[in-house]
Image 1 (cartoon, rainbow, N blue to C red):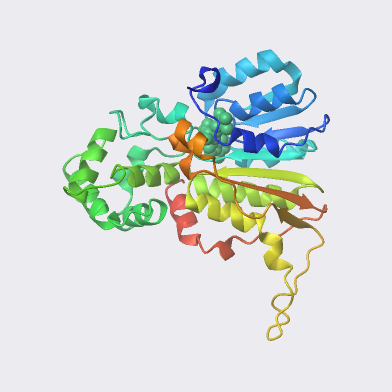
Image 2 (cartoon, rainbow, N blue to C red):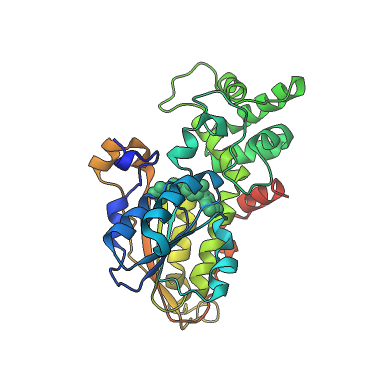
Length: 336
Ligand SMILES: C[S@@+](CC[C@H](N)C(=O)[O-])C[C@H]1O[C@@H](n2cnc3c(N)ncnc32)[C@H](O)[C@@H]1O
């Protein structure tokens, strides 16, 4: 059962709450409001804490309005992408104490078949979370064979990427692929009649959704910038669901470890960059408990990482060291 009949089960809610300081003056930024599971519980538990929440999906206004009605001036909702946080909030000299991110898609979006995210029900191919430049329909019908192969291979980590990209190319020459059912048939045709542990469409649908919403670019751009400009003792919590999301978060949260390490005996000039500000992480990622996974199987791939920035100086976090330029380039190419 979902708490308070919300359409989204807030993943690792207890673990997120455990990292929130009960300091009454705290200002928290919930960067991925969704159906407000995190925001609501924090406002209930900490009676003086204020929250500013962001979400790119305008359909979550209905949940934000409910929270606003109950918590009044302790809660503000902004219908924008989290990459706009710096422009909208930080530049107004708000001092945010804790940024919370819960990446990916919500059950509210996935289960609304009209949004075209799911291969489980037929709808127009769409997959836009909000504030997008393109839809899945445009990507699937316009991307080159090579790019489709790379999107399905790198974002979806699907070994059959080439076969699927080829089948998409063949099919759309005859007629555009307009619905989730049509895309599903194309994938199943490419995969052939084999046994699969999970639905054979999962990875292709996920990869297309990630590029349509420029998800990795949004995460790197926002998190690296906010960590970089954050003031002393600002906290960051990030819940991820995909290995590539976690790779970005881990790299940013471990940034200081790499730059502050001791200079090498052989290359003293390469590693001796000392920053006066640094990030301290809680170390290993946390995973949902067995009982949470039983209650909400969608939580099984979740990972939570927490970090604190110390010092007021800005940090320069270099994207190239992630070795994911190909993926960022693909997201950019189809979002102009
Ligand atoms: C997993 S849900 C969050 C659920 C939320 N923690 C709750 O308890 O209900 C992710 C949400 O983040 C939003 N989102 C994804 N990428 C975003 C972005 N770049 N900017 C703002 N919101 C984003 C999605 O629209 C979705 O509503």
